[in-house]
Image (cartoon, rainbow over all chains, first blue to last red; front, side, top):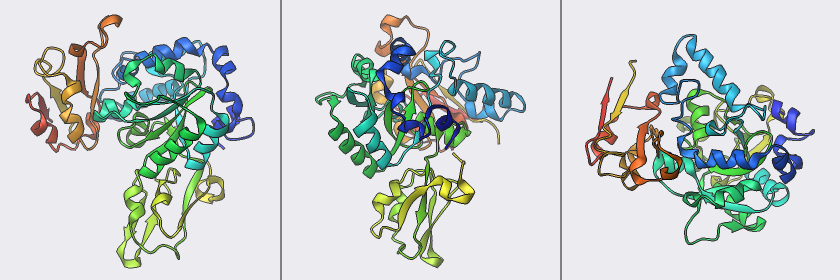
Length: 290
Length: 84
C-alpha cells in the first residue's frame, strides 16, 4: 500500500476503487476542458517551459548542485499535484501511474473501467520512435475527447471496443512484451491503461533515467522457483528493466529485485512455470519500495 | 564527463527545410536510448498547429546520448551535429 492507496484507495489499492473511474468524479473536477486542453497539446509537454525551464537536457539540469535539487522538488510536486484549481493542463499536472500485472489490468477492464472504451495510438512511441502503434486503452470521458482528435485514431479499424475485446487486446500486448500500466489523469481520476515500452515511454524515461516517481513499481514482485529454472534464458529477453540475468556457472537466471517492477511479463516466456508474482508486502526487503 | 551537445540545423530539417520530420524521422529509429523527440514547434497560433512546416525534432534527453553517431550517419540532410 502506497500513499496514493491510503488517499484514494478506500482500503484497497488505488486502482481498485470504483469511485476513481466514475463519470461523476470527472464532472465534479470539471475534467472535460482540462483533458481536452492537455491532449490537444500532448506532443509539446516536454519542451514547454515550466517556471522558465523546459525538460530539454533534464538529466544535466538535475545533476547541478543545489539547483538540481530544487528542480527535482518542483517537478515531483508538479507531477503529483492534487489541487484542482492550480493544475495546468499544458504540462500534464497530476498525471502519473503504476505498473500493473495482466491480472489486475483484466479486473479493471472487466469491472471498473467506465464506458466507452477505445484503443488509440500511443503518443510516446510516435514522438520518440516515429512509430504509430495502437496500444493505449482509454476509457471514460477521455475516450470521447480523444475520438475528436484525428491524429490519435487508428485508420481502417473500429476504435470503440467492448470489455471482452479490450481484455483480449491487453493480453496480446502483454504477451508481446509490453508493460501494462494504469494512469491517474489527473489524480484521482483514472482513465487509461497503457502498454508501455522502455525507453520510449515518457513516464518510464523519467523514472528510469532521472528517478522521478512518474511510474510506480507494481504492488507485486517476481519470485523465481530455482529448482524449476532450466536456464533457457527466454525470460531474459522479455524483461524491459534488465532485472533478469543468466549466470552460466549455476545454469539458471538470477533476479535483481531492486530493478524488478513487478509487471509479470517474464512469466509469459517461461515454459516451466518457474516465475510467479507475489504481493510486494510478502517480500520483507521490498515492502513499501515502489 | 562533459555535456553532450546535439545540434539540429532547422534550415535543413523541420520548419524551414524541405524535409517534414513526420515523413523522415530516421534519427528517431536509429537512436537506441531515444534522445530525440518529434513535436510541433511552439509559438504558432492554435489553428495551424498541425501544419507540416511546424514540426521539428528536438534532442530532448542529451544526457542519455551514448555518442554512437548513428543519427549523424542516418540523417539524409546532414543536419545533426554532435559535440562535447
